Length: 116
Length: 116
DNA sequence: CTGATAGATTGAGAGCTATCGATGCAAAGT
DNA sequence: ACTTTGCATCGATAGCTCTCAATCTATCAG
Image 1: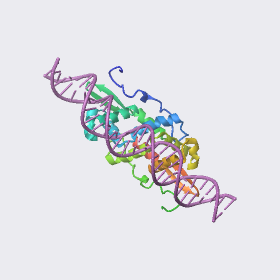
Image 2: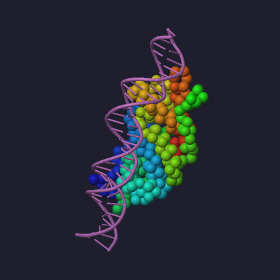
Image 3: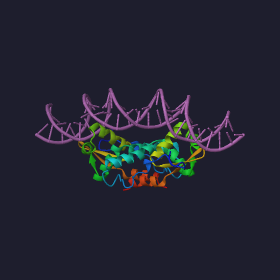
Image 4: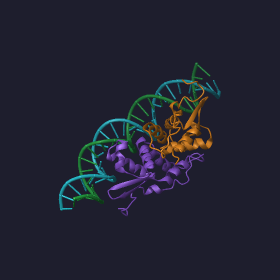
């Protein structure tokens, strides 16, 4: 499945989140659900450190995360998947490795949603 | 308990969150835990709409939330407590009513944590 | 082709969370 | 004093999530 090169994760991740604003006007239910999905992805300390590591390194493969995060390989895979489905990181498979990087536009959209 | 007027909720809420930055450098575990706690509070659609309502109205009592959010009174109480413990809203009891308002500094701290 | 490695997926267990009915309690109203 | 009202708390339940061992798949090295 997928074209083979990259990004088979995060398909519905590229969704809106374009204009939802928490503080300016009452959120519609759909906007709230979409935003809550992203915030949930950020609502775990291991995932926050994972995201932080990826951001610092620029690009990281999954195998470089098990050590620093002190979690098993399936657990790392679980967390990368959740962050990717939230659109916060992008994965690209190159050879044996999956390389992860931050999706800055998505992070910016989250910040914008909390703008006054 | 507390001095009687306001704010008996959110005691450990006024915590740091001052300088944690997700994207700039690898998060320490304590920072990650603190931030994850706040993001978890934001990671529920009902709570996001609740926060949104409070922000729009400026000040809202719990009784005005049951209708719009279509949740029972205990559930509303549950969600206000979680948002208050995360420091995102502040509650003040006046007479029979508890009035809620957004804690803008806290929201701003969350935004800053996602700054590039 | 064979063996090794990166990582996704599956399955299971422990713990957490969203929800509501019932109850308790304090502040107003009568 | 009695009743009503707003809201916190308790208890129970259904569903979700974090975690890892085991397994499967795909890629690379030889």
